[in-house]
Length: 240
Image (cartoon, rainbow, N blue to C red; front, side, top):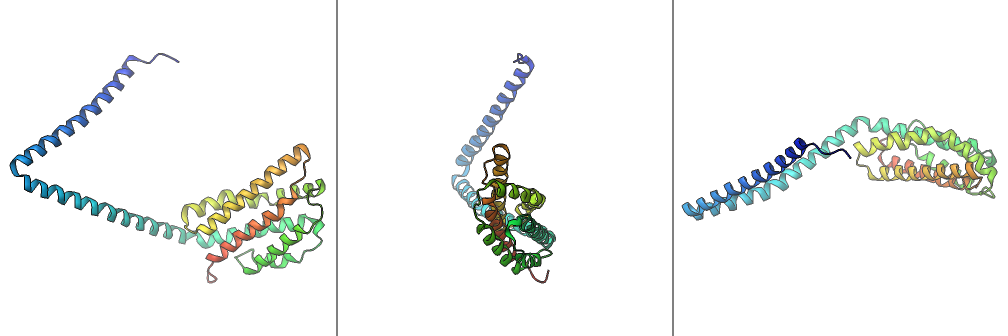
């Protein structure tokens, strides 16, 4: 480590000593004023001090309450400008990621959930929840879910839906957290992000050591998608 410059050390000591001197000076001034006030009119000084403390005790909570309400109002105004656009974007990415899983897992041999899931692409629709539940049920009914072949297919599905999942968790989730106070939607998106990371980690493990265990997370991923969709419906205004 290079030696410290004497000028730098001197400035540091000067700043420190200057701060101590300023604090000490303020204390002395307050003390002198207090002594003089007590000698001149102790009663008036006590009344003024008490009034000052009461005003401070009342004004600070009121100011905090007003500022807090204003900040919440401003946040709601900002969210009102982007809420419908955000809801539609979330619905689109949820639908597309689920469809990639349904199409990519050809072992399912059943595309009946597709119609209901498609209903919720452009805007949130309760039919999509029914389709997602059916898809999760089909995935859980597949035999031998830990097989390597199924994991290979699951990896392809994940890669096909990865862009949509990334948009949900890396772009739309921060927007919802920043502008919205809709905690159920935030929590469900965070849950989806956690499952997405689990699938991604299991995919890496399978690709490096052929461990299997990727496909078994797909039903959990679909469940997480359905939970986000359910939270989305709680805030969707059909007139939007």
